[in-house]
Image 1 (cartoon, helix red, strand yellow):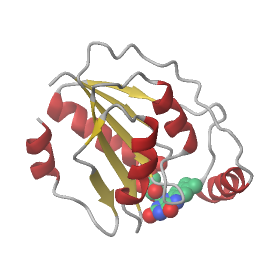
Image 2: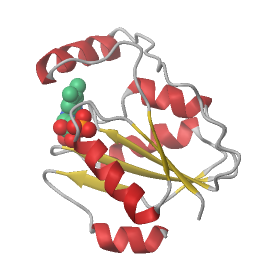
Image 3: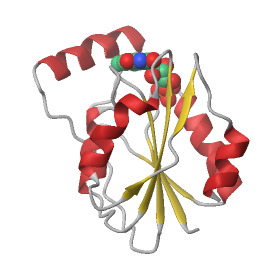
Image 4: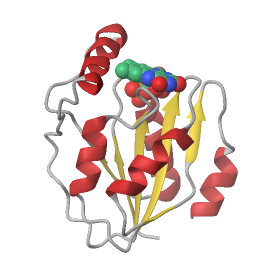
Length: 151
Ligand SMILES: Cc1cc2nc3c(=O)[nH]c(=O)nc-3n(C[C@H](O)[C@H](O)[C@H](O)COP(=O)(O)O)c2cc1C
């Protein structure tokens, strides 16, 4: 597998997981950054709530990478209001992922990555979205089994 990890992390949990995956797969990694960085937990909660309610478009400042040399793209994000952050979804929609395998991983509290998958599949309709890894406080999938399956 020739893999690239694209991820966002506000407070470090997803980043820690992304770096563990990078080490285990020996693949490349790129952080997706929002135009306007999010602040602490409570201000982010309020801001994201407003952005969702008012359908505010949120973009990323990260340049879309050339992914032509990769067959697998891992997409990592914290779950915000049961979805991937909007600028992450926007960034993914601008990547050329046609024909590639997309492997999502998400960190959260009590939510589950399953609630984010329909949106992710919608923005990369020509990819195979498989092997999602849920890394929540309430439920963590078996990491070792997952890494063996995607290797
Ligand atoms: C704006 C915002 C919304 C969140 N919404 C949810 C949610 O709907 N469900 C959940 O389980 N956790 C939610 N969380 C918690 C994060 O998903 C969790 O803390 C995550 O692991 C943070 O990852 P990070 O450290 O990589 O930023 C939310 C956190 C923030 C800041």
